[in-house]
Length: 287
Image 1 (cartoon, rainbow, N blue to C red):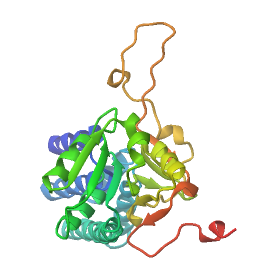
Image 2 (cartoon, rainbow, N blue to C red; image 1 turned 180 degrees about the vertical axis):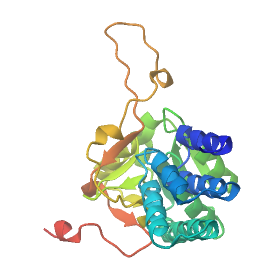
Image 3 (spheres, rainbow, N blue to C red; image 1 turned 60 degrees about the horizontal axis):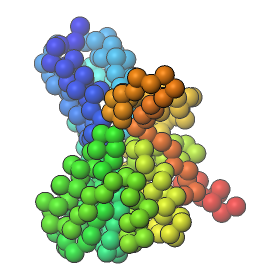
Image 4 (cartoon, rainbow, N blue to C red; image 1 turned 30 degrees about the horizontal axis):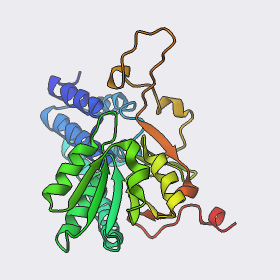
């Protein structure tokens, strides 16, 4: 039986629809570590704990990878609690190392743009701008509000606090302002095996707008986010969310739909920024 504290932590992570993939992955690792540290659980309890977490945020590949690494490490070399705690720390350091490299690589690309457009709240993108702020703040950033949860407002505030000139705009205004942007940049929740990107709703329209204006469409995502396997059914990930976030209708013929994620085809990505010098599916690109 898991502690009440752990159950509360997991419930908080499950309900979090604001923060990005890596933030939630790190929060999950912290919750697991605290639970292991506060109990005298054995291997069977660890197994049960990991199985319980299999369905948490199915859209986030970095969570799947972290859980996979925990299972593999547990199976081969975990003999006592300190070993398990050390394994969690190693996984944490691995994730953060890759994120640091990715955000640094993105920062170098952002240096070449005077005006940038983005959507949602990406820790990778925010960290890149934090690094950029130590060199220059002479940039204009357009941030879409990112409905329905409007987490773009949080990113806009953070960027403005760093000293950048920020314009917070409605999602529907992206096409109007994109002509003034040098590049359009997004993060990613998951990179699927076929090279397509799973990210916040509204990302696909940015990719199409970028293509129309012939602007670079940049996706920043570490290899932490490479999906282990392709989802059998994307309906398990792209699911209906609370309709009251948009409009609670009582009209018989009016159906309200609300989703948080969508796919962006690989061919719409101009630049892929990661922690490794990789090009997804190079053979297909060269056909």
